[in-house]
Image 1 (cartoon, rainbow, N blue to C red):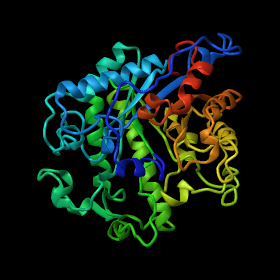
Image 2: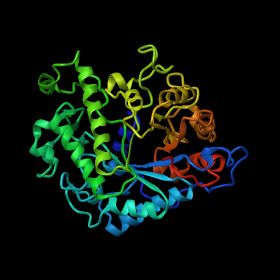
Image 3: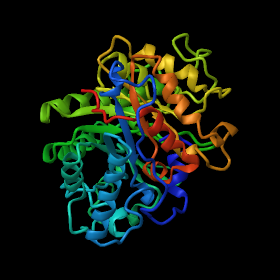
Image 4: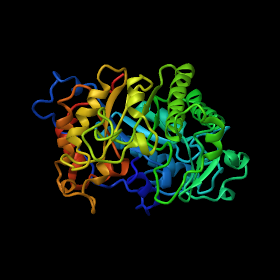
Length: 414
C-alpha cells in the first residue's frame, strides 16, 4: 500500500491470528439507504487480505495445510458477515507464488522456506471457497519486489533472480526487478498470467509498488537499462513512467486475451500530482506518485486501460496536506467519462491506532467517508485496508460502517 503503511506492516512484528476479535454485526439499513440508491444493491465492498510478512494471513509461516486453510476460510466468512462482497488476496507478495507456479517458487509466508510446497493450493482454494460464498476473489500481485532483504544468495537456488542477476537492482536494503528491462516486463506478465490461465479469478490487482518509494541518499541504479532503452525520451523520469505504462497496458491486453471476463484493477497512491505542479492535479500538498514512483495513474484511467481504480485515500477529512474531502471529487472527475470504475481505498488500519491524527480516534471518521462519497456517482464503492483491521473493529469503526451503510447485501459492479 502507501509508503507509510505496507512498508511498516511488513517490518513490524504482528500479533497472532485470532477469530475472536470484535466484529461488526450487520444492522438494519439506515434511513436514506434504500433501494432507490443503486449502491444499496450494487457497489464494491472489499477488503485487502495481505500475505507479505504474514501481515494478515497465514498468521505465521509453518502452519499445517489444514490450519492455513481454516484461517483462510475464517477470513472469507468474516467478509460475508460484514456484508462485504470482494476479497483482494495477495498471491504474489515478493516474486513468489501462492499457487503451483512454473515461473516462481512457493512463497515462504506459507512454510517458512521459500520453494517448499505447502501441500495444498491456496489460490485455487481461495477462488473456489470465495465463489461458494458469493464473494469475488481478486488476485493481488506485486510486480517488481523480489525480497525484503538484499542478499541474492538467500533466495532459493532456482529463483529467476538468481538465474538472471542482471535483472536485479538492490535498493534500500531490498531487491527489485528492474522495470526498465523488456525481459523483466515480459517475465512478470508471464508469471501473473499463469494464475489467470489456471484459475477463474475475478480480477488481477496491483497495489502502488512499481518503482520503489524514494529514500534519502539512495539511488535506484538503472543506468545500464537507461543507456540501452531510454534514448527516445526527454529524461529518465519520462522513460521510467513509460516503463510502468507499458506494464499496465500490456498486462491489461494480455488478461483480456487469456480470460476476457477477468478484470484488471490498480490501487495507486492517492495523490497523482499536486495542483502546484500541474493544473490538472489535486488541491493537495503531498507526495506525488507521478514524479516520485513514476506512476501515471491519471493516464491509466483516462486511457481506459483499467477496469477499476482504487486510489488509496488513507487521510482523514480535513487533512492539511491531503484532504479526503478534496481527493474524492478530484478522482471522481478523473473517472468521469472513462470506462474505469472508481472505488475508494480506505485506511481502516488507522482507526483507533496510536500515533495517528486525532480524527482517527473518532469512531465516526470512517463512516463519514462513505457518507461523503455518496455525493459522487462516480464513486462505486470502497475497499478497506486490511483484513486484520476489519476483524479487530477498533473503536467499533468498521461496525459503524456496516450499520450505517451495509444494511443489505450488494453485488460488486460489473
